[in-house]
Image (tube, rainbow, N blue to C red):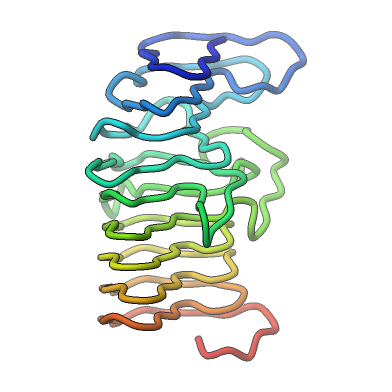
Length: 239
């Protein structure tokens, strides 16, 4: 229905029905000046990939709202220094592509505030996970379908009541990063949370079901309390 590549975009309150055989996203914005305050209220029905696909850089502090269709991050969405991306309770974000230790699917040098609630969590998952947000992929999600949430330089991340599934890294932290992760779950992932260098992290009351390691932090300070972890892979690394 709508494809915008380059420049700024205000795509709001549209209704789209696709009837053809193509599986392209209903809405797609690839921009270095993303403002989520101008991308809400859209709906989609019919055939195809019923998502709002987004790629590029968030240039304006704004809120990604819970919408009738899920958000899909294609390859990488960056939140640069000085910008805050807030994610509202109940929001569903699906990911594909990206590569951590360079640029995760959702990369943060500014601030990410994702505060769900016990009854309305925020979900990050694979585009192939059709159990939430409608049919958007194969229906057979797997670990590493997307690379995860990353923060580096002087970024800050707050995750509360978040469900994170099928990424390679649930959360990748590098540099002088502040992270507060509480009351959240990480499942079907290679590593739950990994931090290197001078990361300062609070990790409390979370549940991990991972292939390799639940939490690994080297350098910086850490408060790791009241978490539950299950490892399902062959690794003999410490949990």
